[in-house]
Image (cartoon, rainbow, N blue to C red; front, side, top):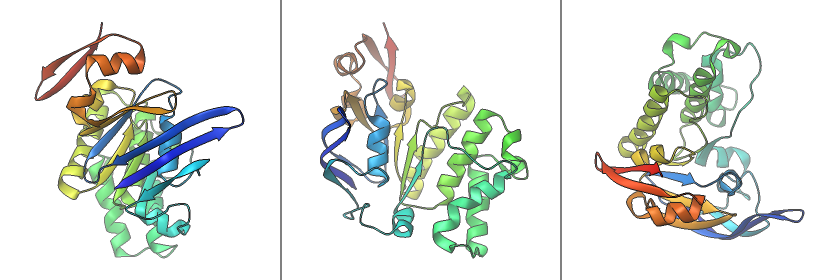
Length: 251
């Protein structure tokens, strides 16, 4: 479980996070939703142990990520930021292999090669393995970065808006794969999403944020209500049942 207690983060006179206390459950997909500027990305950075809060604390399975050694933290949690950058002429398989660094520390072995191959297969990248990253489309690049994060083979995977640049088919396939990782491999996944229906379809838990605070947190079916969504986005929504989940429509 990832837990925060009275977490706040301030830059200058701007308070980005305000007294955030929550628990991210293991073994499920948790979707973080909210308007632009709600603090979702900053919270995810704090959860990953990359941005130290101004006050409060974070615990990943009981451990403080800010006092852990870098390589120990990298074996606990894998994090993919928005719009990641990469070195030109790097091939897809080489990028994905970077996810293995915390395990082999520069001396890759058979297990590392196996994990890279597994990641390429999982995200439909085998035919692109030898391609330079700069020759890929935006969606293909995004899948390669998610595959790198997966290859890190951590119990926790944190993704900041991974659906950016993905067409509907690949967005659906990526979310389905994340759900499979949670359901079949026991991975614990937290993902920032702007597509509310992707959150409704694939996330087991929802954290709804606004103005640096958690507005609502709980099971998807309980959080994704017309009242909560209106309070979160200042926009009216209808919710209707669809395929065992909810379909959300702005009205």
